[in-house]
Each structure stands twice: as structure tokens, then as C-alpha cells.
Length: 198
Length: 203
Image 1 (cartoon, each protein chain N blue to C red):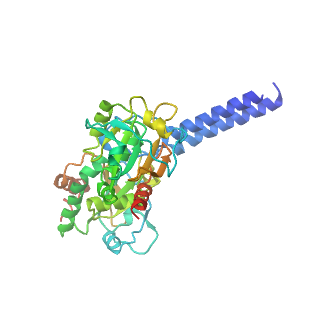
Image 2: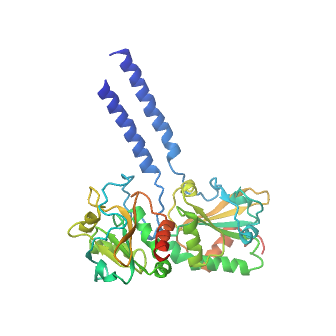
Image 3: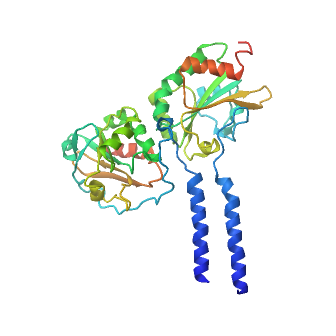
């Protein structure tokens, strides 16, 4: 064997090792785990004053979900192109409506949606078509979707935020939207808000 | 030595490609399809040579629809603008999410006096089962199954493995092609591009 051959083989083995080592970084994350923290999700502060006020945010730039002024945040990962998201949209709107009409819940539970693979235009189309009143955010490049383990849509994540702004996931659910009232009861029960005294 | 180098490079590139295609899909899947979607992996973005151009008269066709009707392009002449949405195959990831999006856009199509025709090279029973998962579609779904892919071939969008490209054609009331998007098969065409093309028809 020539010395050059040996050097080349070492390079090839190194390249293969590099590929093997790099592969885990490309593997999508696991779906959000109940009891665990949210994946790293950065969202743009909404331009709309109403949405900013609803979420208790100020200024511009980006924010993380635990910065939302609430005890509980419900995140729906949806897609404008997803038939079940479309079917569930009126029921999900009803959840929002029930929360907003309840003085004991209005300031404690907030809802947002993340449009996986949807452009701003597509998210706006979904919002207008289904008259969604809570803030929706585009995730055109699937960055958030990937961080959430490329879950099938719709996917519901419930986040409990403590006073010190630490947080944990209490609900991580693929589809299976049971209707507005049962879903709200599930949120109240699993987040502990019901026991917390309304 | 050169052969060894080439061989090893091919292996490395192959592993890289497999790693990327198998783990980073960049696609959403609706719960509507459960585990019934076949994952073809990352495909060559475009694998055909277009035979029509913007400004050409659209090649005519008559195809069977899932509804049992037979649809001809000529029936819309001087009556409606027509959008042809070719998708590669039933029960695959991006295709399964494309038409349900158009399904909530009927108002936009109506505003621009346009009809949408969904087309694949699948046969009618397959299209029937697949589109049933999407809910009730307001637009006809046509089968270019037999002679296999003849319409896709006529437009120059039949891939070498017998499926069509993911392609959109906007045809005006005079039968002229006004917009073509032969899209990367792995990605969904952004809705705003199609809506922009429809807006140009009525300006």
C-alpha cells in the first residue's frame, strides 16, 4: 500500500465519522414531553396592538412563550392545509370564546397557534376563513415544527407558567380534540387551575 | 486510486443524502391520514422537460372525474378561467396537504372567476379513497391514469417514474396559459404565488 493511499483512507474514515456524529443534530426533536420544558421557540412580537395586549407583551422583536402574561398557555400547532385542523377550528374558537367570557379565566389562560410550514399569507388566510381571534404565527420554514418533533397536526400543547416564569408542559396531545367544553375541562384539570381556586 | 476516491465520495454523499432525507422532512402531516401516508423520501426536484410556455394555447383534454363526470378543458372556454393542479401521487405527504388548503379557498377562486381541476396519474378508486380523507372537495378531481399520464406527458410534466410533477397551470378564458409553476416536487407551492397569478387575470 502506498503512503498516499493510507492518508486518503484516514480522511475517508474521518469523513464517515463526521457524518455519523453530525447525523443526530439533524434528527428532529422528540414531541414535547408532559412534565418537561418547551422546546426553544422564539416568536415575533405581534404588530397588532390587540394581540400584543392579549398576550401581555410590549415592544418589538421576539419573545418566548413563558413570557406571555398568563398562568396557562394553550399552543395549537396547525396547518392551513390540514383537514382536521380545519374541522376542529370552530371548536377551538369556542374554547377561546369560553375563556374570554369567563372573568375567572380570561386573564389566566391564553391561546396561540403556530402554522407549521405556513407562510404569513397562509396563516392569515386560515385566520380569516375560520375567524380565529387568538394570535397565529407562521412557521414557514418548519423551524418550530422541527423543534416540536415534526408532530402531526393539529397538535395541542398546554404550558403552565409559574410566577417566577419557569414553566412546564402539562398537556401534549396529537389531535383528538374532544369538543370545546371537554377540552376546556381537561385544560383546567390537568393544569391544576381548577384546584387553584377560580 | 481515482476509482477508490470516487467510490468513497459517492458513499459519503449517499450517507449524507440518506441522513438528510430520512430525518428532516420539512413537511406537515395531518392527523386526517393517520399512519397511511407513504414516505417517498427526498426526490429530484424536477424530472421532466416542460412542453408548453406562458402564452401558448393550453393542450386540450378530456378526463374522468372521481364524481363520475367526464371533464373537458374546452367546456370552460369563454366561461371560466381554469387552474390545473397536478400533484404527483395519492397517499404521499405534500400532495395530501395541498388540495385541502385549496378547499378553503373557493371564495378566492370564485372572485377570479376560476375553476380548479385537481389531477393525478392515479386511478379513480385510489383517488376516491384518498380524497375522501380530505373532507368534501368543492372542485373536480381528475384521473390521468389511462393512457397512463398522457395529459402530463402532453404538458411535459411526466417524470421518468410515471408520476407527474407538482405543477400549477393557470389558463384564461381564451384557453391561453397565463402562469406555470413546475414546483420542486418535495415542497408545496406557496399559496400567495397562485393567488397572485389569479389576481393578474382580473386586473
